[in-house]
Image 1: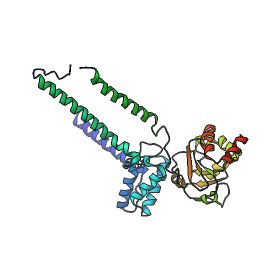
Image 2: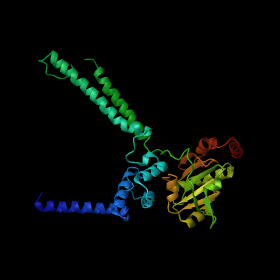
Image 3: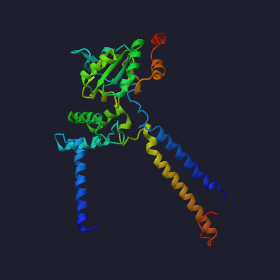
Image 4: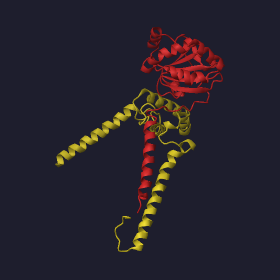
Length: 149
Length: 185
């Protein structure tokens, strides 16, 4: 690649990044009176799932329902509600499923604990295998073939 | 060494297959998200009536009565599918239907009801979609069964089918009205 096309590429990438960013703001335009509220608003809408297009956040979703929910969140922020009050409200209507990061409660315990259980299981298996191989190596130092057979 | 060393990975693999299969089959994208409103008081509202200009529809009017709260809109294709069943429910006289006309144009809604029939006892207008959020709606149609104490007893997502009506909704209603339904159908 020549230096020139390299520059071209960077310019194109930068342009597409910029376009991407502006597209995101077209969905969630800046609308809060203070930067603090704006930051809280953006943080909140990124933490909620769009219930219609379920792998997108409210910040990214173009559907009407997401727009209505963003308006709801904006109104609650302007009414002086805390982030926790807003989260509690959304959960009271839609359940924990609406949170991209669900809290650790009884209903979601399996969600948080499963990876740990799998890690623990894997570690136990690994330790077992290593010990076994160490034992084989100790009984027959000539045998550097690490398969059990 | 024996073959036993293959057993554990195989068992783990089989378990993973089962877990992932359940995940794919029952993923909320495909299935239904349970409503946290069940067992809780239905959201209180007072909204303009679609069919009676100048009047309001409010939850207070339904205290002491069972009702089906049905969220719909003329833009909703599945609601058109459901329409015939709603008219049947109305004809059965078992439980009144209260509609929430969601994000709709009132004129469209009125002409739709005129043409296809109006199954509702009353219809509240949710022009900007804020009431639907109160009910945790994420699509239409969605139907809630509310008891005389104002508690949400059951939620049905999607167009009510004959089967859903007979197996899910009717059994939750008091016996007297269920008997009436049996005689009318």
